[in-house]
Image (spheres, rainbow, N blue to C red):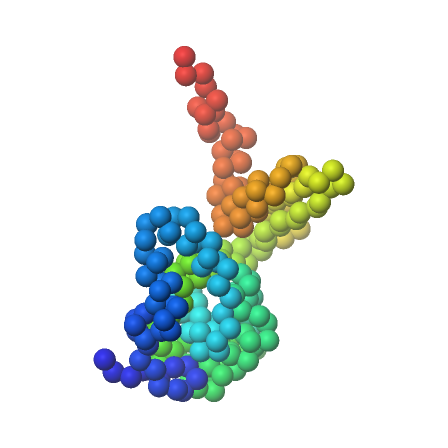
Length: 230
């Protein structure tokens, strides 16, 4: 297998778990076990999901731009890369600059605005090395990126707030806003951490689906759910 140069310019031939540390090899093998994958494995992947190695961050940036398929402004690229918490703002800025210097990103002008486009070399790196990123990171970040760009085109944004109450319950507000109006705003009270976390996780993962579901319920499209089966 040929040697491929990382975004930083260093040669690399990491294409499988056999080139990783003993712990990484063990962890990846264990995560293939059905029970572990279904229960504990996913939780552990989330715990170690933060990207700290600069090479991984550069690959992550290229992976996102490769899949988005068109140039982004600095601010949009920064928000897409950092929105899920996998990369901090400082590292994102530093790695974007590195990718431009190394020829993996091209800085262009569009209507007087700086735009970042992935180069052919950058596409090659993204295609060859994206497997270094955990599947959960790739899956969630792409979903978040497409949602961010879709909402940006529509001028929409997701709102999610948690307010602890004096009686140890929580007030949770979830909503979708578009420009100067609220499309949906729901406030519920829950009495335990487990329910709170499930609501926050589900709404964060699929706010559009929750919105569509609420509209379907309110308009009667799902009245069959309440019909007596007798």
